[in-house]
Image (tube, rainbow, N blue to C red; front, side, top):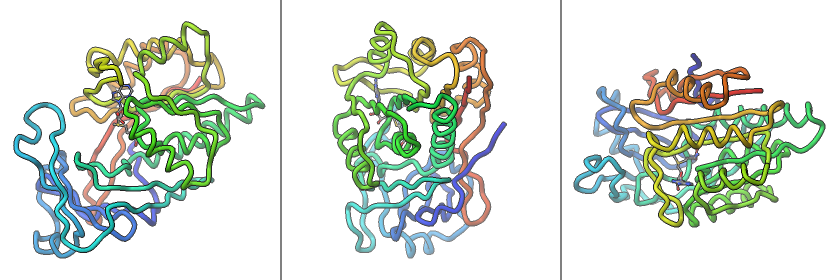
Length: 300
Ligand SMILES: C[S@@+](CC[C@H](N)C(=O)[O-])C[C@H]1O[C@@H](n2cnc3c(N)ncnc32)[C@H](O)[C@@H]1O
């Protein structure tokens, strides 16, 4: 089991976490926001948090009760812009992402994903060399495109898919900011798209999935992780190239272990290939390890 965290990322730091919150620096700005997994005490005092933070996300009434994320608002403590950008210097590639304070405590990047971006870049490059051609990579539930940019930087033909048009527009901005081009953008329901690709006999060398617990496609198609994930993975098996290929599944849902993700992927992809799995974690300044998601990778 692997425990992976971002390494030497100049534009990002988890300063402290505890009491249901995390204090993070993105570039020049420090943000305090909810973190349900931070069940322990903060290492710094509340006074120190207040002194450091530029802004703090305050949850709306009923937060966490509906099983979905309720909105809230950012309270500005010190002057900062509503939009700014951070650079990520990966292993052999670089990407730039625009950040913004959204109504759902998210800001356009999940920093713990950095080790996945490094993996995607390395696997895509290796597969391109092995096949002596341009690998096709499909990024499902792709949000603002951190993973799409890593695959594109490695020379792939990338399809970036998300159900939300504004998020796809944001990803396109990140591509331009990063000095890249040529990503194919899809605003569609993930399962519907993969089924269509399977019917057409399309094949991909890499499939990346980061599905949420609940969601919906642009035409109201219902996504519920517990009910839909295995079916989606089975469909992905039909469009994954039989050799020189990889799958990366990431799960944020509470209650899903890395072993469960590994079994799911092994069963859906017929057990062939080599899998590795683990947790994405971030260490704060005081050495406290905050686990954020689980992942599994399969290579054929
Ligand atoms: C957890 S986020 C992905 C985070 C991203 N991979 C990253 O690392 O930055 C989940 C994304 O899935 C999208 N989504 C939800 N339901 C969907 C569906 N049925 N089809 C396609 N995308 C969907 C949401 O719009 C959201 O952008």
